[in-house]
Length: 235
Image 1: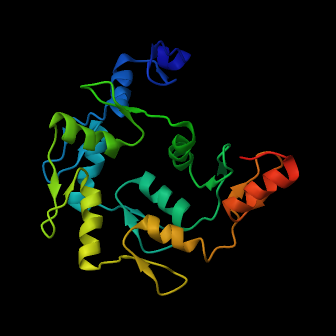
Image 2: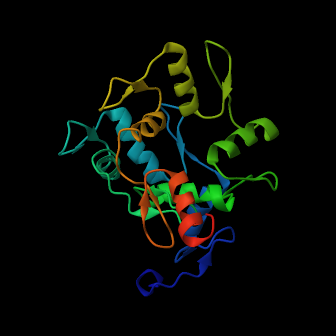
């Protein structure tokens, strides 16, 4: 009945979230601890929730039933298709940072960005009092300080990584593989973030918003200058 009544007595002591069921709180706490008990038996990935593991298994099965109506890509999950359309086919950026005015396509991107300004550290170590801004920092800490987990080692240079994604990007740099190609020019990049940064050069979209008057600017330095000139303050 609590679900229908909106009663949420189970509160997280690390953030402001609350839940109607204790099991939901327990699942949420894994966000802070980094605990991922549901492991894929086909690769090194692990997940905090069983549902996430079930969705991941579609990747190995090749089940991509959700097709984009705007291009030829298909996806294993409806949420991934939705994010693809938002990030690739839309220039809308409705989420603005109240600290610096930068605009983001999704609230999740904005939430991650805000940590830079607030110094929020949602990931806590289960063995000590250390806390971290990003999950990969916690994972590296567990490996270095508590010998928990397994280092991933590059076969070419023996460099060690805590996350498989970082190792994959590192190997691409050894091999010169650049799968992310700009649609506006011949340049290509190792990571999606590098391509995203490059594409700003082609866009006329203004990503930075003045928190006082709502005026938009293409670059952060322009909005900072606007703050000083029009509002007599800095961001």
